[in-house]
Image (tube, rainbow, N blue to C red; front, side):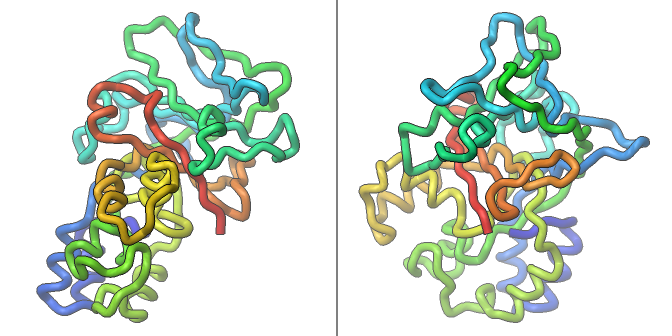
Length: 288
């Protein structure tokens, strides 16, 4: 929901929350790598758009029956200072993100977390540092997005107060995805968070900046086939199994618009991340 420096977020919390509540809230912050368009003097750690660098033996990702996926972004893990985040990213190699963006069918087929038949419409490819790779031309049917080099900024992220991890600290048992009676849900604090930082942005790790309800809920529901109520403890347990791998916001510079100024999200289980099973990452997207 919000990102910034640890000191700035702590100051914000102490300005709007009781002392003990503020410190508990600060304890829930998570580090992340924020990705921004690189200026001339910046070190590029990845890119949005352009063309990906893939191993020669890797086929361009495709959704059977629909066509090839568009290349969205890539990041060089060796340049990310991965030790600064709290998920087990590779220390080297490249993560490349692909998504069926509607170019080929005028947006008819949608990639949705709750539709397992569409899951092949988004993927993450991991290219090891030792793999021989080169820039790959996009399939003829696709128009690549403009290339925007990305630089990295380290910072802290805060989840929305109704995120399950926050709710479990301040109001265990409160309805999932809803505000509850507590200072962290006060309008004063919510307004302060929004004014401090209302931008989704591009990000690796940390708390996702969900456009709607927490993206972990969507993914947990999806892997449970949607056959579970929001009051079911099994859903709460499944939600805890997922962490944000990456989010990519709509971006004018890259000519990317996801719905109505929405964002793309990839989540993964920590065990799969540790085992480099990026084929098991889950995708969802949200639009305002």
